Length: 486
Length: 151
Image (cartoon, rainbow over all chains, first blue to last red; front, side):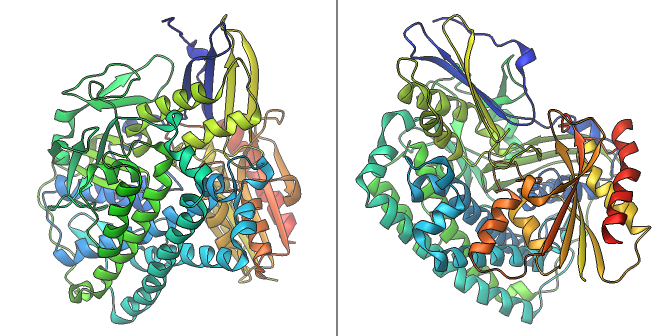
């Protein structure tokens, strides 16, 4: 195998860059993805008041402020050695469900969905939310908008502003819920449950009943047999807000289960010279390059990773869907990258059902929502962000100021897998040097299934997914560049 | 006429937050109760939510261009600007969000949407709070353009 090194000069920040290298026959020899990485967080955080971290980190990303907010808050619970009152944990989790509701809805209908709902072969100008609405009808479009807004409203009621939550404090939350608020939330959640069921039905009707789609999901360029990781509760059911990290193997058997504080005992990060992104892998297996299978330490997170890493969903309707998912796709583990979309909808249903349990819990209106903090020390906090496992790690000095800070974000946890997925998809669809825009979309579909987050808000003209694909021939000369939205 | 002025961007990403710096500066100049000034670390759909119900929206944001001069300030009509702060892969662009809302019969979309762009070659990916010299110099220029816009 030839080794291809990309000059670090080609490191490109601000948008995703896929480099595809062809061999002398014009087939794909290798492919790499580079995504922008935010840098300098540790230095930025040093010397700041620890209590400010939930607010500061919620600004890291306009996409998942709630996930960062609570990963930071939970890290502070640990650093200040305080266990929040049970009502506070429930309020946090309820708010978290609101976030999952709007985030998963946005992804399915607006971003990833167009690939499936519209048609993978459709012209680019149709592959967007307007194309989706054309296909499913304006009334459905209205439901989508309504329920995404409900998710946001729920987070706003609990967290202050939906976009910058201010409720999380070490030891609890800043305020409780009153009866009127719970009634309002309950009404919205009730509607969200129906909407999630309806969304799964759309997936059933449009995708699962269409042979072409099912073949695409099961086709070999979109398979990847890595380990899988996600948070689980004591019954090994998925939980977004709390639990232990569970890792399962390619057959769905438990391989590891550990507390977040043992993260560094179990996970290590590999560095490649062509990107700033680090590639986490399972320490006990080791880094074996960009390869899957049981001898490679690469794992996946996010909706599919979570479904594979768990033994079911903790709510009845979602659990039924969970079982159907594995029955339909051939048992555990499901390795099809495109199954991320279906997994995301099952999680949407779970988040709505779980929100209902929480809002109906008599304790949710308790006003005992904060416990006094202890002495400052070191702590890690973990949540399942919509797109995968997110960890914050802080070390405080005796005055409660940040001495060390580190974030391990979801897209980093998925980095090795995303890279391989792109390479496999490129190998599967590019033959004899034939690289068209349609081919590009098939590669991109693989990438989009992960709902990757580039972390930094990039403003470039015009809008959409900013992506550049460069194709190099066997002499490593650039022969074609496909730019999208750059 | 109800107007909203939104500074888009991220205050902890250096020059990326220039829109918010401009919005904060505008708070010292504008006392009209019909004018709301706010910040938005968000794009696309969320941005649309924030401007619904106003007659006019002025959005101040960092804009990455290949040909523009670093620190130049430009008023950009909405139809020439197909995105704002939303090239994040997990969102759609503001114009896409508006087109969709129109199709749904949304009648609260502002009649006039103005983008005031502070042009820059690269949007930073490094955490810091300070603006670079060139971009800091653009703040008063952008403030002036917005003040003219609401006169």
